[in-house]
Every structure is written in C-alpha cells, then in structure tokens.
Length: 199
Image 1 (cartoon, one colour):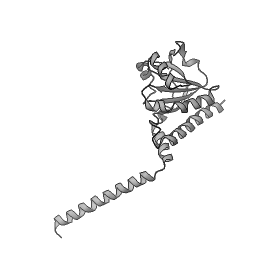
Image 2 (tube, one colour):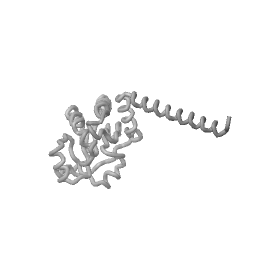
Image 3 (cartoon, helix red, strand yellow):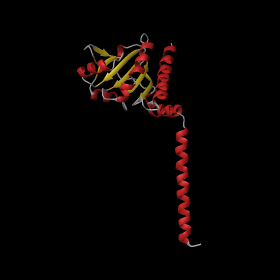
Image 4 (tube, one colour):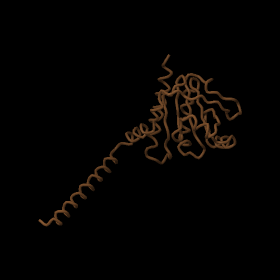
C-alpha cells in the first residue's frame, strides 16, 4: 500500500480515537455526581497545609471602635475574611449566620475585612451578619499569610488552625451550590464539634 495512503489511514484512526476519548471523558464528567464534584472542590480549596499552624495574633479595632486582641478570645474561634464585592462572601452569609446561631455560646465568630467603617456599616444593612466585625488594612491581612482567596474561613482550637477553606459558591444558580453548601456546613460542624469534645 502507498505510504501516503497508510499515513492518511493512520492519521484518521488517531483522530477518531482521540475524539472517542474526549466523548467518553465528557460523558464521564457528566455522569459524575454533583455530590462528588462538590466534595472534590472542597478538597481542592481546603488549606490543609495550614492545619496545625498557630493563628497569628490579631490586634485591631472592631466596628464600634473598640480595641480587639485575638489573644483574649476563647478556646474556639471561627474567622471569616471577606470584602463587600466578593460574591461568594455574600452567598455564604446565611450559612455562617446559621452556624453562629448554633454555637454562639461556645464559639467566637470573627469577620475580618479591609473595607472602610462606612462601607461595612452600609454592607451589613443589606446583608446582616452575626459575626463580630474587625477592620484591618489589606497590608495587615496580607502579613497574616492566611488568605489565599476570598472568602477565607478559618477555625482555630486553642489558637491552632484545625480547618481552613478558601473560596465558596459564587451563585445560587450553580448546580453545585446546594451540595457545596451542605458539605461545607458539615465540615465546619465537624471541626467545631471535635474541638468542643476535647478536654
């Protein structure tokens, strides 16, 4: 058989095989359950390398102008870093409020932002949050070396980071929104409960 013909047949075979693989991969991704996709997304965004690290001390002012020192907080602290135009930060507020309501007597809930005093007050009128609001500059937040994206949520037990998550669902319209929120809630719940059970 002519070498050119052989080459053409070989090329067509390769292209067909490649196309078939792409179709199978697409089908596989389609069949991949939303639950599994949500779990994988959480695993990708967990700051596991921070687990076990000491949470840096934070000295600042709260929204009421009172002095704040993280060293004066209790055994368990839930920190949430946010800014006003961050869509995932806004979308997760109801979830965070639910957790705060459930554990408010045993956990300190601290929200940290670089937004101005006026912008935070205006934001909270539209998006009420049960967290204590702490104001830091961008430079001060960067020096903490905690945020790798927004929102960043950190749970500490006796000053040690036991859970860290970066990012969140950008829109309730996403098909991953519900499974992602439910799994994040469970992760936060498990971390807090585990620390509460420790003596």
